[in-house]
Length: 583
Image 1: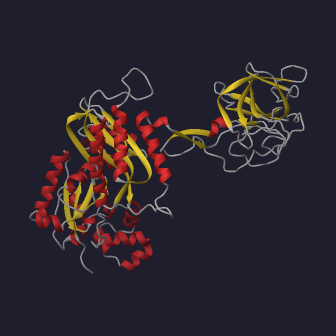
Image 2: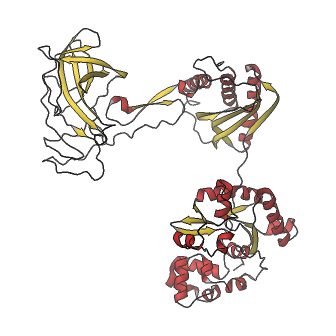
Image 3: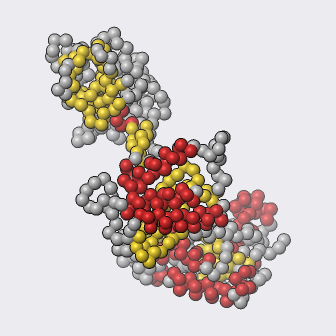
């Protein structure tokens, strides 16, 4: 079997501490510990001088050094702070693999050949990282990544063929497997050399696959090839202008030129743009940014149109005296930048069966996007249906081009809420109260069940009680919602109304959901009374009843009028309201 390839590994000591200094400004020269699960995972040099070690509990670490600064472990922060270091290494060598935040490796053969040897390559990389990122690092070179990582902690270059001897004297804890190291210690195996001397078949039978892999590492047979990362291509295009652009015609010319450059750069990589970021900087330093989304492939003409529309919208903004348009920049544009925020392979979208997909749809996109570029993204919105107990709660207006996500999750089971038999409840999450029968021969509007259910939504933790005999049914996703069909028109502001019975007395709904009399006439605002020919309800909802400030209790009715129209009414606090209109 061939020997593992020579690997060069760069290691930054105490990287979680350095990342906290780079990102959060925590001085790494002070006593600092990084904690995860209440244990120390990294500490600064000053903290080690005070006796703090990895694995200590927080209280013990603070007992050894009361003035120590405690930082929570954040892998995302460590990775973000390490990216400039990896980029600096890639400026010297190609094909870098990130082992973990704070350590990266590359093949040693290439750098050693064109930099004058392994020692010269190590010195060049350490010096370049120190000058570019102001970060101290050490480099180790050995046969295999595992041995190179141990050599980097000593800043050592292991000669070819000497990796097995270099590993033989290391303790078994160097494998980074605490459970396996503890078991080997109890079996009398204390060094990697002792572990490597064991027969491979016996190790596999006793310790399993992970133990067999650790056995190969201990013997210096780390033959896994490096999984190098490919630096991302810079697809951004930028144009600098000596004379500030403050006219729309000059902006259109600049947009066309820059769009062609972006399209050519994307085509060179076999990519196409689906989401475009447009950034501009004015002569006064004002920064403008807007993202355009498209469900197809943006051609050079389409990119130029969107940039021109956006620049037109910025340059022809309001003059500050009011109006719907955003404020116009105080100076002309001196820098224009296009960022392909979303790209895919150019063959990733399939044309339509009879040609390009939706020419009419494309024209509509262009028109609506232009309106948004002039008036802002909130100028064009589309409706998204979701969950909720009232028609107004089920609709969310989303700007054109944004992701169509409902504000509330929709129901998983279609149809009205299941009926529950009469019962009394004390503190339960779902309670049913008997309601009077409907007052006419009218079938319920959009419902085949004339029974009504009072639903108390939600229940705070710790509240419980014993309910009456209620038929066991699964709770629907939105208990108390109005049954289908949905109304055709939902009023943005409910209209005040009055409901009277046949004797002219106001119809009221008691706390126990008893209707005082059958509704006979409806008066909306200052209009003329209309005869009610049929009605069904109430559908009551007691929302957030455990929070008095946010509590809301109301009952809804569906009514048919003599002229054939159907309405959705609600009564809350004794006031009748018209919420929606049915077809």
